[in-house]
Length: 124
Image 1 (cartoon, rainbow, N blue to C red):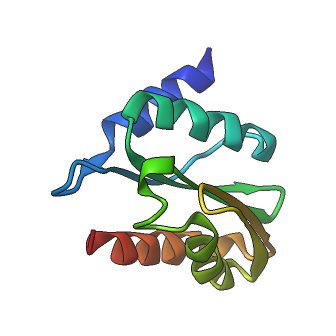
Image 2 (cartoon, rainbow, N blue to C red):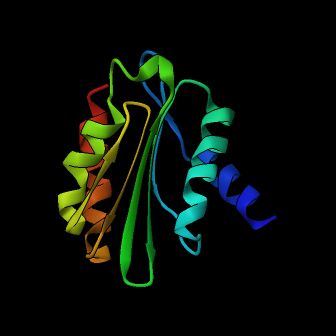
């Protein structure tokens, strides 16, 4: 189905760090916010050791999700990362070291949020 194509696109867009961590930072369009988590699970399954940051704009609100495979949570804590990103979409939220999600009232901030995620993860 359509969501499988999105997984393939996200996987194709992953970059690989020097230690082999795969990183995906992307806005996904036309995906229900409730489907972001299963989507991130499938991306992580496809990539192995990875950090996935997804943002979606739906009904005038932003949803941001950060998923980190268990073997990378010592490097990047999903909860810390999501908390550093969500002010850019006037949001709040959090979660656990391997998975965090937040909502925001300002989807116009998504491009800046993705840029900041790239900057933070560039140093890995």
